[in-house]
Length: 529
Ligand code: AHR
Image 1: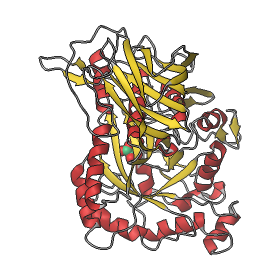
Image 2 (image 1 turned 180 degrees about the horizontal axis):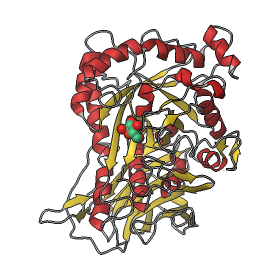
Image 3 (image 1 turned 180 degrees about the vertical axis):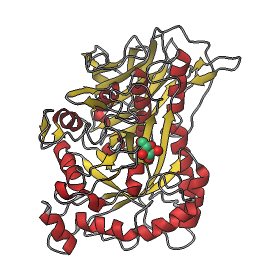
């Protein structure tokens, strides 16, 4: 798709709000001649960015587990004990993230016992998604082995839809009971894991307003209480996650927590809204207006975080409960599957990479509120980082964004203040507007600063002044992900169409003049004086 010039006009103030967020204005103190500036407030910390914000989700659906992750030890596809080798090697590059399993909707009809013991005697079941048979070849032990291979942390989602509190509590016991302490611990040992698995992230149901049981918030809260009472702890600080609303449904959150607060408050560490920004057009075919509209929709994560946090604060003023956005991403119409058996598989373009980057920047800016977020899904599904089919494997542009953002992991998020005219888009007399530049910044130690910026303009570069308030740059390295085609994507045949490129720069001092390419994600690695 060819780009066409799109900037229909400049608009005025669009302040997004209080400390910790980008504010987009037409101009202001410190803005350069172009009127575009990003001020990094080096001494205004927000919070530590948990690597778990960069987490993943892997469900038994379509080609995620079978073909994506698991190819089998006898496969011709290069594998490590049955796990796709190329995937393992790439997931390792994502850092110390978390992977959520086994669903999704699948989790709410899954019995963990189906996936343990000798593979040949595991039951075959109706697979929840389409009328496929779930062979249960991949179960708890396989998932844990995958996590170990990739050096990531497991997050298990329990079945509230068709399961029982007893079943859930026994899964926790099976995983975490000390060696030899109970019959379930012995069974685990017989299945190859003598020592406890030490799993701390536990979800209680999934989308309980929908496929997870179609509960009212009050009914789900009653279930949540039953599921989390008498959970065996075994010295592990369990991090319990309650299923949150569909997108930013504030009524669901208010009603759940009103019920939660009407008696004994069940333990909750994470509140899990799901936000899919959907689609505009099609995965590969979209107009420039649809480019902007998709990014606009992705950017609603900002509002969701602020609103959900505000409601949580009414019931939990100390904010012990954090946000866990354990499903998010684009969701395009069917038609770009590389394998028709891979339900919800879609190609990811530069547009999806920008949607991912601006969402990750949003999480970074709210590092004090968001403990974890899991893009949906890791491989062969919606907003995937990877596509795989038989012996073919490719990293999508999303993967490169996740890798580019790795220096933010564990760093201290600091405020930025963006002054930039918005971009107007859409037909009609009253076009919509989207930020032109947004981003996030974080510090590691005293000297290292990482600044990531998303530039949404489809056609024009942006000259930006980057003002380091409270510091000065000694050395700056720049990494850019962009392409001249908005729908550029990586394929098995051309896997490096959209990849980042890094260059040293001669930028120095307290004010850095930088040109952002159109439709780009930029990372600046700044060593401070
Ligand atoms: O990610 C695909 C599905 O989307 C998940 O199973 C469900 O939780 C959501 O609706």
